Image (cartoon, rainbow over all chains, first blue to last red; front, side, top):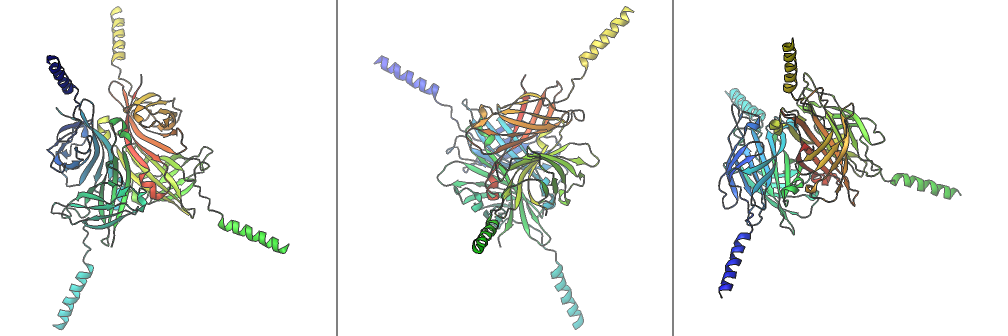
Length: 149
Length: 149
Length: 149
Length: 149
């Protein structure tokens, strides 16, 4: 009897040890991009939408950019552990009323240790005057974000 | 007296005729893309946000795509006559739970006759299994939309 | 004898009439883009490579761009009737030594009447000073070219 | 006399030590991408053109891709220390004649220690059957390459 009780405890202990890391990704929190930008995402609402703000880093190479609001949503982590997300940043510019908007579209990957990484492509559009000028309105690039702990 | 009344009427009539077309663009309404897709955008809310749905056309070349919900926002036309907009489509697929999301980022141009055209670039992402597979997750293209009258 | 000769002529005439349009696409020739640019592609060499020049149109919205040399290649039309092609333009700028390069990657489609259309995506890169500034170096867009006859 | 000779040697030695690292970038050599691909670029010809081959890594996530030839060119390093480059890869596929082409457009950055890094955006196109199917033909992404030493 003592032996089987010990065996049970052992089994439970092992179960705890080898329990898989919960591989879920919520975007809420603080993130740093590979180009030195930072962003803060507030708690998601019940529809997995979120808001927050984006801070261009020294790497932004454009001192005109100010901390700017972001909004987006992610897939429900109840359905998928590594959700697709998107968010948009409406840039606030110093000394300028010009419109500049970035949309990020990406996926949150979770590794075996539970570490999350966001891989995203983005499009950045500046206002143009006419369809003839539209060809030069859009820049493209990628960003990889990791959590600030 | 009769003459000056007539002159007044004439002036008013001319004023109506030569009144500049109001060059404002609201995304609300029905649109057709250059690749045969259609979309319906409901009335914008007070923050210039909107929802609607997107219908892949015969040109979609993918019978799996179903009519899917869209959400987005545009710049306030009180501030700019040719607003930047974005919207996202969360694709509903026949026989599949796979995630597929498109974000459109574009600008609405209004010509001298008041005709609106939407020029947009889009990114389409499919879920990948890991960062190593992320490289092939994203397609890109452009769409031009005109109003269905 | 007269009858069979007539029949032969008739058959030949019909053969000519109903001969399928040769659905092959060679990029050699003059093309106009949907944004008003023009390009001239010289005769392809035996490896399906070509050179030529690119003229920014009024739509380029940048009076600094001069007629610039292009180089590229296409798939062998002996292997595929609707070849993939690419070409690169090294922009010559008025009053500037700054580097600006565009690569076009596209496919030549041939319709049932034998009309060719080039659908391409392009990336335009300007030189940046450092990796930190690289994020803003690249623009993206699409071009559709039809033959100038 | 001995002293001035010594001083001269010292000056020369210092000159060698503090000589600025030659910040020039030639693409010739072996490179590894951030997604585990490798490429070998042969010696550039007098016009700064090059050929070589590209090996998809384990990260390619597509066992169909074989080692494939690449061709491209870079700006003359006599004119610019951090040249823009492009190259194209015509993919060889196992069990397939389908055409798949990637173009890379990037810039070679050299840091203060003389270390070179290649930052590139790429477009990958697969053949489509018609303009109506063209919308899904093109994928996009970025690659960062460092030298294999």
